[in-house]
Amino acid sequence: MSLSARVVNDVVQWIENNLDKPLHIQDVAKHAGYSIWYFQRMFTCHQGISLGRYIRERRLNLATQALLTTDMPIYEICLMYGFDSQQAFTRIFHKSFSVPQDFTEKLSGKSHKIYTPGMTEPVHRFV
Image (cartoon, rainbow, N blue to C red; front, side, top):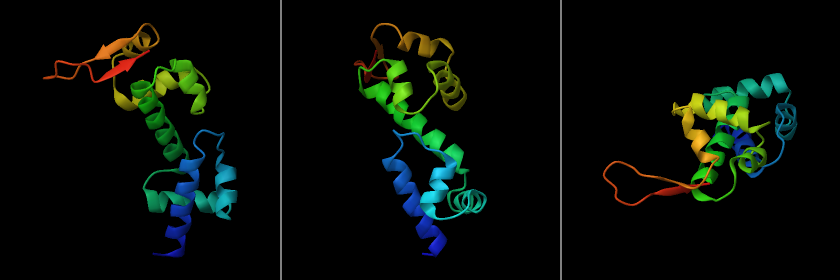
C-alpha cells in the first residue's frame, strides 16, 4: 500500500471517529499533515469522491440509520450529525434518496411503521 493510501485510510478512520463533531476540511487536512489543496486531491484520487461529499454522505447515512433505529426526534438527529437545521437535512435526504416530500413530514409526527413489500410486520418505527 502506498504512503498516500495509508494516509487516506488513516484519515477515513479518524473521520469515522469524529462524525459527531464539527469537521472542517482544514482540520482534516491538518490531521493528515498536508495542505488543504493537496489533501483534497489525494483523497478524491483514492476514494473516488471529494472529501466534503464523503463527510456529508457518511453523516447522512448515520442520521438515516438513527432515524430507523431510535426514537430520537428528527431535529435532535440532525443536530447530532452536524446538519445546520432539519430543513437542510430534509433537503439533502430527499436529494440523496429520492423519497416523496411528505415522507419526512410523517417522520416528525407520531410513530409510523414502515412496511416493505411481502412483509406482514413493520421493520422500523419512526418518531
